[in-house]
Image 1 (spheres, one colour):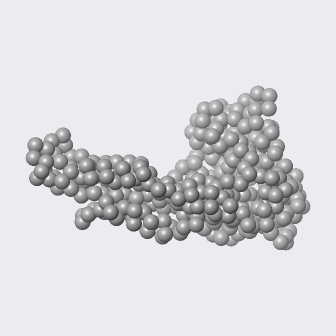
Image 2 (cartoon, one colour; image 1 turned 60 degrees about the vertical axis):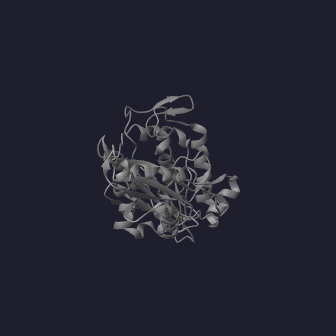
Image 3 (spheres, rainbow, N blue to C red; image 1 turned 90 degrees about the horizontal axis):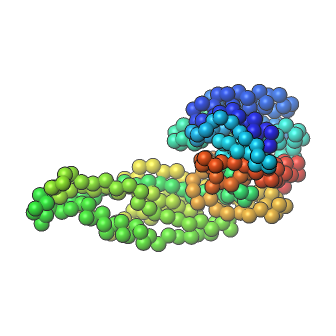
Amino acid sequence: MALTAELVDIPSVSFDEAAIVAHLEAELRAIPGLAVDRIGDNLVARTDLGRGHRLILAGHTDTVPGDTSGSRLDGDVLWGLGTTDMKGGLAVMLELARVVREPAVDVTWVFYAREEVAMVHNGLRELFAEAPELLAGDVAILGEPTAGAIEAGCQGTMRFEVTLAGVRAHTARPWMGRNAVHRLGTLLTALEAYPHREPVVDGCRYREALQAVHVEGGVAGNVVPDSAMVRINHRYAPDRTGAEAEAHVREFLAPFLDGGDVVELVDHSPAAPPGMSHPLLRAITDRHHLEVRAKLGWTDVAFFAEHGVPAVNLGPGEPTLAHTAGECLERAPLESCFTILRDLLEHGA
């Protein structure tokens, strides 16, 4: 608990992480047997013991903006910005690096910056671009809060902008035009009734979604609008490729489109398969009887999966407390996570 409090007491809002990175770098360089690399505000520390498997343990150093006045311990509960998301996880990682000097697996420790902001700034993305060889491994565990469960893989996410065409006219003579905003109504009704899939992948049940998230339209109070746009977010399970998911959405939209309408894919982050068949993940699940559930949102595990490394989330804390004014972390889940991961490091598969 003291180590978590120490890290919480170092403010590290996104883009202001130099102090905590310097602190972690000094701690890691003081541990015998670790080769430490710093790239920007990202740290990678590696053992090189010639073990049969290499495990990656990763976590982000930044927090969202909030009260950076520090931590407060109340009995077995530590309060403060970042306790759950995710300085408890960082404390587990650092303490494991300190105490497990002869692990049964080689370990790569990754402390990366700027996870809480747009993906273009993500430190993990920077590491894969600048030094992908440092992130080679057999399996990765990210210490995001999961309330003691394994959140396996993640769903992909893609956003489309659908622009429907109309014909401009005076609202006193609407029959002379075609109202593009009215055309959105049929499409929005269909989106509300979208028949989502719930595929099971590696024993994990995912739930797909297709949601309208933004609407634009209108010219003036007396003009039939000749254009209207809806932005749509699709969350898709890892049994589909990005190309398959895009084709599915375009097929769904086709009955509502006419000539002059435009469907544009504006961004896409791919899904990640659960990877629970890997012996290291099977070992940790079986020995500790952990719940395994699908990750319905998108997380940084997808960066690893994209490079052929199965990855899951497993960290201390209740995820629903992340980014809230009441963020806190209890002692029991912190110690439980440490015990589970220490067992994996000391005994492997």
